[in-house]
Length: 492
Image (cartoon, rainbow, N blue to C red):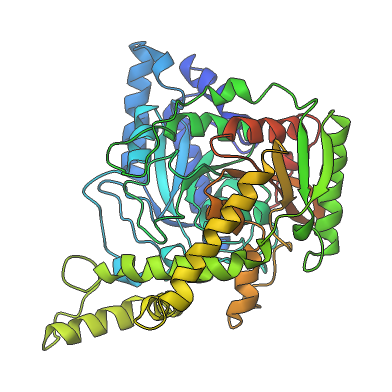
């Protein structure tokens, strides 16, 4: 049996899979180890909504049988790897709540495409992670199941909306997790929890089975301890899916091989308008240390500015709520989910269902979106936001004619106190200032840990042109090869 003193939490996915395939590690023992860690530790963090104990152990036994019969093991790059899934990604016969009262008892009858891909690769789904309700939030305090706490300091937020997946990886409750990113929801919590988080190019990873928030912005991506592990999972979940009309047919490279090429001669731009006013000094200092490493590795690094970048947050908080207003209209109390059976008519049913089922932040964004789309305001707000989005996207894409990648802090601050911004939506929304541009333009971006500030993690964001995941992961991996920030672990 695996014990606490074992080095499994410091071992990368590739090495764990090798040990499982050669029977040095038993899949059942590994699964049991992580389930017991969740049961023992997560009461302090609240990162997991549902533990999938029975089915995950059954799955582990199936994997042991596969190994025993030596069934083409090369087909299973994630064989036996325990993974936790953000609770807005559909899992067949496993409760999927989006951290909302309105879906508190919803159990899908199908798997999201990314879940099918993980299972086919040999992964074991051991639980569903807490999150901001319907992925709306930057602190993981907007959950019907209670807030998630940062494993580095239980008085701090883990970031959001994928705070549960981030905290579970940082706490060693799983080997990796999947999150979703609409305006920074993978990268910002990754930064605040000291792990790696990747938002892929829009369309690279299927959204089929993802509970929609902002359909033109949403993307599923991996959250892991290292860039190497991130590449392992991305290689499995990326690819064309006919069930997603926005899915790309672009060829998927071997990311695990592409991330070891080095960065000598690369041109990297520092986004100057994301490294000045509004950025904590400790965060700037940490990012500058990573910049020094990039220079030492042979990259040419220079400052640049992106026109219209200061408009990113404003246009995001018009477009995303507008799409949410449309997407969340389906929760009416009739088809599935929370409902009042004693209502006298359909209007009373819908009013009660939405009034009682949605949390305050979700209601706020529905109202913003409905207002922006309403007659008389559509042209003034939503249409103009889309026009500025096009211009901002063009200005970002133009920068990649000059640079291989662009870097900035992932978050303007380290993890902040629980409840400190709950009643100040504008302050909360500004936490997304560094991450939103990549969603607006649909380009990939990764957050990797850099030097700590005030004993709390800081994230470096690396953004690249469309379908440049190999390139930005190569940059991140190059930094991780000569630094140890990603190896730091919270004491819990």
